[in-house]
Image (cartoon, rainbow, N blue to C red):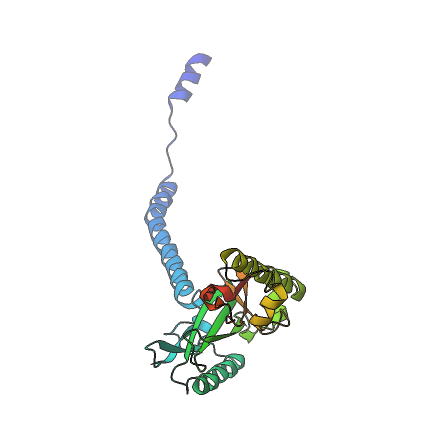
Length: 258
């Protein structure tokens, strides 16, 4: 008797209540709409990030332009293109820098042989702007080159001091000076090995004299290039040994760290 009752209990199947069946059916209809809603929210956030935050549109004066763009351009007497940049940040520091660049460029380009160009790059929350000026006033085929840089903290839209830039990379003025000295010594040794200089006629101090270098840290400007700290240090490339043939545009770049 007990065995029969047990078999009957096993054969009885549990049925879902009508209420549970209704809730299950309702969730099956709602879940796809919840998924669509969440997807739309994600797409909206992605759009805002890509078109507003990642491009720093919220700090720009003109959201249709890049953070740095060419405000005006011209062609010099050598058919080379001058480009004057505009830093597209809505801040007092940016306004002051833009005015300084514009005033300097206008005066510099009164000589129609000169060339004024720029480069820029965003690294994290730092915008770096590099100005390169080529002065052909002396009439040589190789110009006198000079540089200037600006580094902006995009978080608060302020111009960074040199010390702030160095602190980002944990280096000091002494570190920079040693790097510049080491690279110039490499230039000297390479010139000797290639026959531009004879060591007995012109030693390293002689080399520096022709370069117009009394202090390694004179007129050093910092630029962040793909996460690397670069120091730009202009110097003379002329001497009685015809060394201007040796140097290139990259010779003025001194890799510091990164």
